[in-house]
Length: 161
Image (cartoon, rainbow, N blue to C red; front, side, top):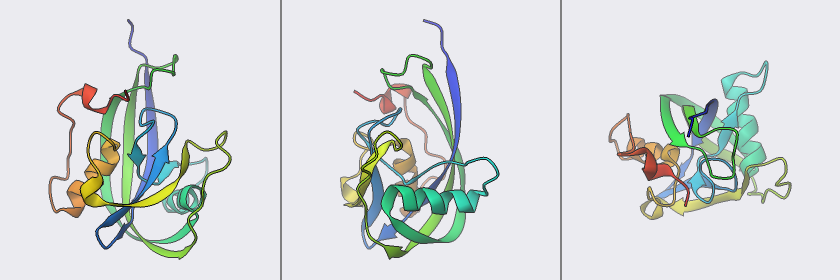
């Protein structure tokens, strides 16, 4: 089978509260049925910081303060089986450490517009490669003072089953 690639550039926020990380529930894309970080695509003529604030508001209902840029990482993952146009995603992710300021958690009711169905604070100990995107695992590595360049052992580690 011929490989067909898609490159995705996105901004993502790492928001920690005590021993919990704010994550969203993905319903589409290569991280379907996994926890992921709030964030997403930068729109035309939008700054990175405006994009992360907008994405956070859309996906979580929270207003945030950006504390710092943590870095950029890329991941190559197989595309979800229902996507027939591409076989792999080269996901370039720009990470920010953010802090909750205000707002109430929302449930994404318009699933046509969103690729997630809401946000949740989850104990970091419950987040694993089996239930999370590689972005979440990278966030945990940074929070634990570990590697700043997390890589999956195999591409299959991130396949949605």
